Figure 1 (cartoon, rainbow, N blue to C red):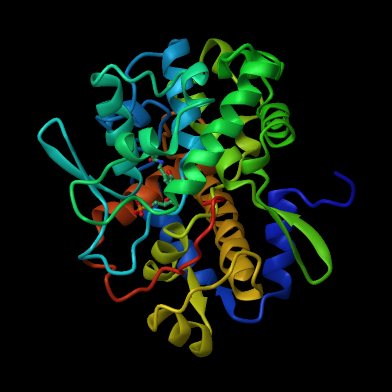
Figure 2: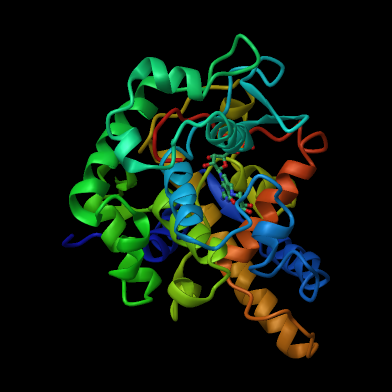
Length: 341
Ligand SMILES: Nc1nc2c(c(CN[C@H]3C=C[C@H](O)[C@@H]3O)cn2[C@@H]2O[C@H](COP(=O)(O)O)[C@@H](O)[C@H]2O)c(=O)[nH]1
């Protein structure tokens, strides 16, 4: 698309022109030092995607790739008005919330013999069937059920028409380039077009398309069809959890006016100036943390378990946010209801 900035270009431009969100250099360094201590550990490596998350597929086959595709097609907007009243899904003796409630519901459906990862099924699945598949154990349903149904039908039909019903065929058309796969996804599937404007420029975040590429790389363990030569050009994924954890860790700061708005739980619409600043500055902040971490590892000649990229930093910080939910209670996340993140 002409004149459309890449996510990294968008983030740098937003950070340079942001009025209500700021990157704190000292905080960036402190987070890089926190990550340095983990550089040689089990988290900052592609294998962590399977090793640390029991709901993720263990296989690296076509079915696993199609599990990733349908899950990332629905990977958006799990936040509820109140944390006490939210969608929960019980699976394998555990109760899951947020993004993990989606994964638990997908696995529960497969166990019930519902072929939810097959495009030939979800291209024509009905709204009632989707309500059943994504049903909550509480009286709070998963948000945006109607949109999830519409997106499943739309995406399933396109996957059948263009890629013989399997996302692995889409991956195989990308010449093992993460960037080519990213663009093939956003050109083919409308619900992945996470683009908006800021200060008169057309900007992109492509959050779900980037995490789809990242999760495809992870489920294929960075090997074979998943051996993307340019995987390090994928940036962090601009969702509503990373900003929260970056503020908690002191790498990102909000103006008093914006913080007050978020503490009141005010909804920010998709593409709103402050919402764009939160997403753009978070993305740029993680890029700066990665640069600082790479500098520290070189200086300290620290062993790392393979190349550290923004995907692995993002995964680590997102998991960190999950594990520190209680500690982060005082830090608001921004509320935007949309299908893009
Ligand atoms: N930046 C970033 N955003 C991520 C993820 C993931 C899931 N990926 C994990 C799963 C397997 C891999 O091992 C990854 O660790 C979901 N989200 C977003 O968060 C929000 C849900 O949050 P909560 O309400 O707390 O569940 C929602 O916008 C969702 O789209 C990530 O990794 N990074």
